[in-house]
Structure formats: C-alpha cells, structure tokens
Length: 448
Image (cartoon, rainbow, N blue to C red; front, top):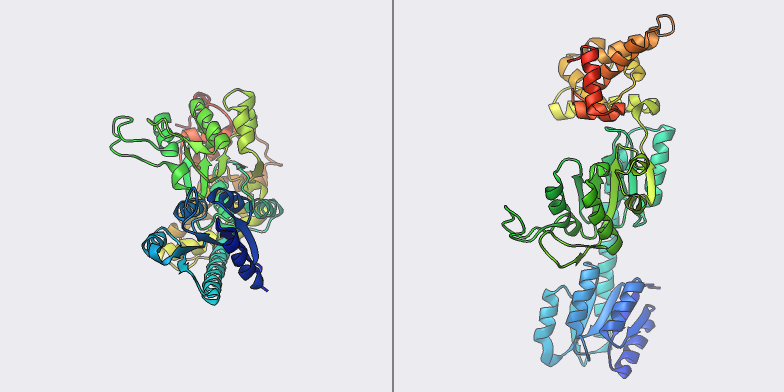
C-alpha cells in the first residue's frame, strides 16, 4: 500500500472532507489545512510528498502557497485545483513550478489519477537522486585511499555525520586531505544534489573575503559594478567549505558567528538581511583550541563550528596506507600523462615507507609525479629527491651513528622546506614557529 503523505489545502470544509476521503481511500496519509498559514506550518514540520491546494482561498491564495513551498523545497510536488474560469491563473502556476492543475468540478478518478502520476514521478525522481548520490559516494570514498585504522576512524565519522546538518570542524596538518573529507561528507548527505562551494579564508584580504562570503550590492565599494550574491546565498541548500578558518580576521569572525546563529547574511553595502540554508564545514591546520586560548579566535565561534570534530591523521601515522597511495598516484599520473605505469623498486618503496612526510599526502603526490616524469621503466631511488633517500639512510643508521641536536634540527628544517617546495610560510606553520624564527634558523644553518 502507498505510504506517501498528501497535504490538502482547501478553505471549504465540505470539499476538504471529500478530498480527504478520496486520498485516504487510496491508502495515502492525508493532512489537511484550511489556510495557507496552517499549510506552511504543516509543511515545515512533516514530510510532505504532494500538496493539493485550491487556488482561491481567503487570505493568501494558492499561488502564494506555491511560492513558499517551492522556496522551501525546490523539488516539491504541487497540484493546483481551480475553477474553469481561472485556467489562466493555473497556467501561471505551472510556470511557477506546479506539477499539474485540475479544474473544478472534477471527476474523482481524474483527480486520483493525477495524484498517482505525480507521486510516481516523485518516486522516480527520488530513485534517480539516490542512484546519483550513491555514485558520488562511491567516487568520494574511493578518493580516501587506504585501509589503516586511523583512516577507517575518519570514514566512520564521515558516515555518521553526513546524514545530519551539524556543523563539522576538520583539523589536521597541511596536505592531509581535509577538503577530500569535506567533499565526502557532502557527497553522502541529503544536500549532495546542491552546490559544494569552497573558499580559503587565508587567501583573501578581509574586505574581499567579506564580499566573497556574504555578497555585496552595486556601488558598495570601488569596483562593485553589480550585485553579488556571495557564497552563503549561492550555496543555498548545499554545503560551504571554509578552509583555513583559523586565518579568518577577528572582525569577520564576529559576522560569521552572527550569520551562523541567525541563519541570515547581510551583503556589504546593504541593510537588509537575507536568509540562507547551507551546511557549514570548516577546516584548519592550526589547533583552534590553542588559538582560542591565546585570544586569536573567538571561543563562541569555535563551539558553533565544532559541533562534530574530525581529526585527519598525518601520513606518518598512516604508514600502512603509503603503498596503496603510491600505486594510486602512479596509476593516475600515467593516465594523465598518457604513459605506461611504472613499477616501484623495493629500495624506492622502502625509502617512501620510512620517510616522515612533513607535507603529507600532497607531498607524496608531487614526489610520485616527479618520479614518473624522470623514470623510463622502474621507479628507483635515483628518481626520488635527496630529502627522501637521505631520510631513509638516516632511519637505517641513526642507532649506530647518532647526530647532534643541531644536525637533527637542520635536517628536519631542510626536509620540511623541501616538502613544501620552499614555501617559507607553510614551512613555519608545519614547524610550529613564526616566520622570523624560521629565517633565523635558515641563516644559522646556511639553508638560503
């Protein structure tokens, strides 16, 4: 028997009763409302599979209700009932997104057949959406390469949190795959058919970041030649990924907190707040709890973002996954470059397994791409950079040939700099020191 919920909106009591008997006679569950106000309340608090509404009612009419319902759920199925003399209005309703209309007086079987067709259409749509979501889920899960226990804990959390609307804070070192985790959450969620929009909060100046997030109106600042909706409105019903949230300036932290609390944003240059419906996933390579303790990040915003926390482990804690990742990157590089896949020699694989990977998966990806370019057949030690082969030699010999503390520090600083392609700001973050301290160490150890 069908189990769909049908909302009947009709201000005439007798007609409402007749419609209810017809709908329940088909085995559907009927919910009734005598006004658009009541209908909106019912729609907001129940799963409604189809709305059957009269177009002429006291107060707001069926067109206004149609607008409200489609605004709340773009795929909602709405059938309009109208007198024959109002067919033009019914056609206007179709343009607004109504599924169909039926004229009064109607033949009962005609009405029921229209309802059956509409619900069959909805079921087909949902089945297709489920299939697309499953395909995306398979793709997103396949990009989280490995079977180690640390990675499996992350995948288990993704599966648990995806079906909710809770804000998620993803923490982990640079290059660990935090955005992949965010995309996997989105792909497995009910929002997977809607946009996933990402922004790096540390890559833009404060004024431009505010405009990118919340939008602006024409003329609000030099260069604002037109209105811009911003991410929060563009991602409506989807997911917003705020990468490097720890870099967000404090004045913007206040505005972000208000947006999350009120579920509305005010574009730059405007005084009108606009509602939004988007899930927030934030990520950072900083320890936000430390940033809060030191006064650089708002505590109330931290708790608003950190409803569920996912810690992405560094690659050195996932050594069991390195071989799988190497094979994946070899295959992908061969496909992208139109080359034959290269085997990896045992000596090269041993070096890759022993290296500490300060740049994590991103560094491994670059290492394999370079090795694929340099090698003609097998990937050997000669195709890996000195920092990796040197690290391997150090791992083998450190028990019998101890180094001084300065030698260890010099080698580690050099390894981190190599791992991030000389990006001093990124290296300083990984090392947990400020940029001026890094420059002093580089000068001391002659690393310029």
